[in-house]
Image (cartoon, rainbow, N blue to C red; front, side, top):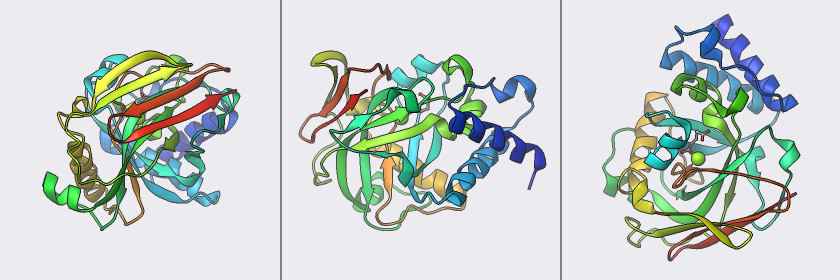
Length: 256
Ligand code: 0L1
Ligand code: MG
């Protein structure tokens, strides 16, 4: 194990546990390669698994132009999801449990058959048991939510939480479903599922390829998050945030 990478994973973990933002790691380590950033992510998530958390799937990040523009990073990233990140649909989310949390609407895939490697969109879809409206809670461990691709990759792609709505049949056309993000009943963002790489199944195709590159497989029961469909919303106490995906229903959470 690379001791420097282990030390950086420990710092990111401490930032998460103490809810204290830290400087971007690439400021001190501009030479960090992307593969090294993914190694740090793996070590970081390993620390969570050692604390008893269970792996539940994979998140894709920066798969839409809206998200790329918001954070100023132009390449896709991925991260690992654990059961400790699951938030109750319609439940309460404590703003204070995070550094600078943001919510974003996403499409969630429920994997029904093992999926890994270079697959077509049809093969990826045939491995899906369900799709659901979802929101991801992102909470960068870096000061001011500022990072480069390698910073955000090391930080598990800002993964902090996910809330999943009703699972629906994956047989419908997912290519261009309307998306609405509301805060206290007011529409703040709209999009189409086409915002994800032209068709959200492409996020799943990428997830299968990237999982294989990391020596991993998507297993039955895993959740794969598509990546944010719109810019993410910075949450404040007193807000009810709701994401609706056409034909699939909605998912909401209350912030206190
Ligand atoms: O917003 C961010 O912190 C970047 C990582 C995840 C973005 C996404 O889900 O698209
Ligand atoms: Mg996301």
